[in-house]
Every structure is written in C-alpha cells, then in structure tokens.
Length: 154
Image 1 (cartoon, rainbow, N blue to C red):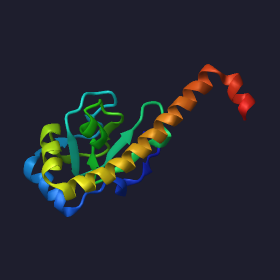
Image 2: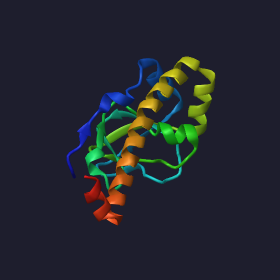
Image 3: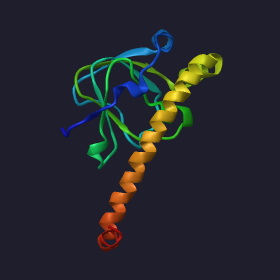
C-alpha cells in the first residue's frame, strides 16, 4: 500500500454525536483490506469508526489517501446528497464501526439541530478535500491527454 497522509481529526465526532449514532446504528466488523464502501457505489449510510484504521482514497490519486481512526465519521457527503460515494473506504486493520443507514442518519439530523450543525461542519471540511482531489484528478487526466500543452504552460 502507498504512504497515507493522516488527517484523522477532520471527521472526529463529539461524544454526543457518537452516543446518538451508537444508539441507532448497527455494529459491524471489517477485516484488513475489506471495503466499507466504494467510490461510485450507491449510498448505504454513514460509518462511525470505533476501532482500527480506515484509508479513504480516490482512484488513481494515491498521494491524496488519508487515514481515519476511532471517532471518525465516514460517508457524510454521499449520505447528505444521496449521490454515490466519491471516495473508497478500505480497512487498514481489523475495523469495528457503527453503521447508520441514510434514512436513520437524516432523521437524526432533522430532529437534533446541534448534531446537524456538527455534521454540516464536518461535511464542509470533507467536501473541500473532495473538490481538491477531483481537481487534481482532472489536471492529471488533462496532462495525459495533452502532454504538450502541459509542457507549454509550465
């Protein structure tokens, strides 16, 4: 596996959000290298990591891989928008999670405004990262298609 950038505090949840998700979610275990969800895959909700490490990655951009640990909430953008996941989440160790379906997560967000605010702040940070990653991918693809134009710009 390629080196992974660690920015695991970006998606850390508060004790209150953690307790709420643990109350409504389903505990699941993933073995090393197993995928929690995949880029372009349909949404199945959010995943609160309770044990282990998860790598979030964007296809063909390994330098943007990030590691997330216990307390991290994964899958927010897709769960809020109902679009396919824009990243792949892969267990780097044995991982325990609390899986909360999209329907249940959105119900909590509607009913508990303070938890919704917290999730929206995390969502903003994650969307900023995803936009940067996708912009990087477009640049790489353009450089492959038009290598001469990239050399002229440099």
